[in-house]
Length: 574
Image (cartoon, rainbow, N blue to C red; front, side, top):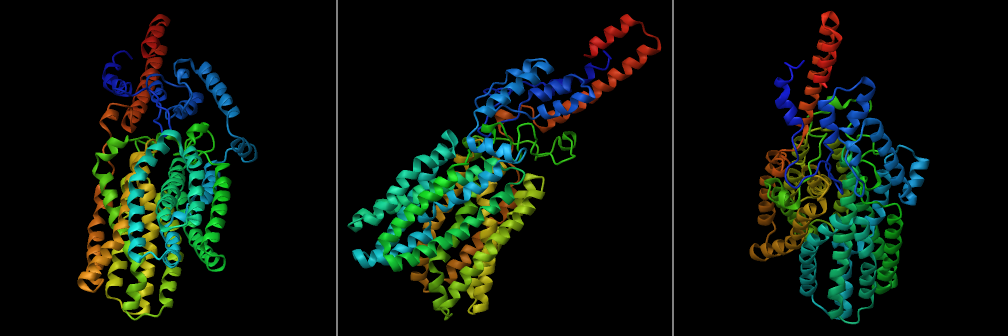
C-alpha cells in the first residue's frame, strides 16, 4: 500500500489544492459557490457503503448566507448533528408563507410559488411599458397643446435615462435583494402615477412620465425576472417561458386602460391603474423570496439536501465533470471582460432597435403599402399567439440540453427569425405577407425574450446576476429608444422603409453568429486553482484507487502477514 501512494500524490494534491487568493473554502450566496470540503474528504478517506450517499451530498454542499461552515472540521457523527441543528434553527426563522408551504407541500420546490408570485409583480410594471405610455400621447396633445415632437423627445429621454438607471438597480438587487428593492420602489412608483394624473401643466408631466418607466419596468419588473433566474437552474427555460404569460396580460391591461380613458377620462383612468398596480404588487410580495439559498434550499429543489442537478435514480458519479453540475459565479468585472458578455449586449441592442422601430412605424408602413386598417390588429393578434408558444417550446428544449455551449447555440433562432421578419416587411405588399411577418416576429420575440433573461444566468452564474443582466437589458432599452429615430431618419432621407429594414436584417444575420461561436466563457482566473469538475473527478478516481489498494493490502495480509504488519499497512493507507 505504501508503494502505491506516491504515484497518486499528484491527484491528491489536485484534489486538496487550496483556494485562490481571496476565496474561502465555502462561499455563501446570494448565488454562492459549492463547498470543497466534502470533495476533499471524499477523495482522501475511503468511505463505507452506508456513508456514500451522505458524502456525495456533501460534495457540492455550501453554506447559505448567515450560517457557519464550522461543521466541516467535525467528525462525521458530530457534523451530521451540527447540520441538523443548523437546519432546525434556519427553519424557525423562515417566513410564514414558506412554513405553510413546507407543511402542505413537503419536499416541493418553493420556487414554483415564487414564480407564480412574480407574475402579478411583473404586471405591476405595466404603466411603464412603451405601449402603455403611448396611450397618453393623444390626450396630452389635446389637453396641453404640446407637439408630437415634444412627446417623441420625452419618449427618447425616458428610455435613455432608463438605461443608466438599470445599472444602479442591478447592483442594488445584488446587494439588498429583489424583495427589498421592489418594496423601496413601490410607494414612489404609485406616487408618480398619481402625480401624473394630477399634473396641471405639461412641465409637470415630464418627470413623472420618466419615473413611471424607471420605477416600473426597470425596477419592479427587472427585479422579479432576476429572482426567477435565481430560483431555477435546471428548469430555467420553462420557468422564464411561464413569465411570458405576463406579457400577454400586460397587453390586455393596456386595452382595458384605453377603454377607461375613453369612458372616464385619462386622469381618472390613471388613478384607477395606480390602485390596481398597488394591489397586484402587494399580492405578489407576500410569498416572494430572493433566493433559495437564503432559506436553506436549492434551485429546482425543495430542501437543502436535495441536489437540483440530479434526476431521480441518477448518481453524482454519473454527472461529475459535466457543465450542468457546477455553477461558476463571475463578478461583474470578470463578466464584463469576456467576449460573451458584449456579444449578448450587441445582439440585444440590434434586435431591440429593429423591433422598437417596427413597433412604432408598423401602422405607417402598412398604410404606405395600401393594406387595410384591420391588418395591424391581425398582426398583433398573431404575434401575441405565436410568442408564448415559441417561448414554451424553446424553454422546454433548452432545459433538456445539458451543455451550456449547446444551449447558447439554440438562441440563433432569435436573430434569424428577426432577419426573416424584416426582409418580409421590406418587400411584401399583401395581407398574407403581413401575416407572415407577424408569424416570424412572434417566433423572434418568444426566442429573444428567453435569450435576454436567461443567457446571463447560464454563462455567469447567479451571484452577481443583477449587475450583469442589467448590461444586456440596458443595451436592449437603448435599442428601443434609438430604433424609432433611426427609422424616421431613413424615411425622411429616402422616402422608403426598405433601406433601414434591409440594413437591420443584415445586422441581425451577423449577430446570429454570436450564439453559435461564443461558447462558454473561460473560468475566472481567481477560480482556476479551485476545485472544479476536473478536481472532483480526480477526487473520485483517487478514492477508487485508494479503496482498491486497501482491499489488495488486506488480501495480502490475510495470506501470510502478521497482525502487526497488517495494522501498520492499514494505518499507512488511512
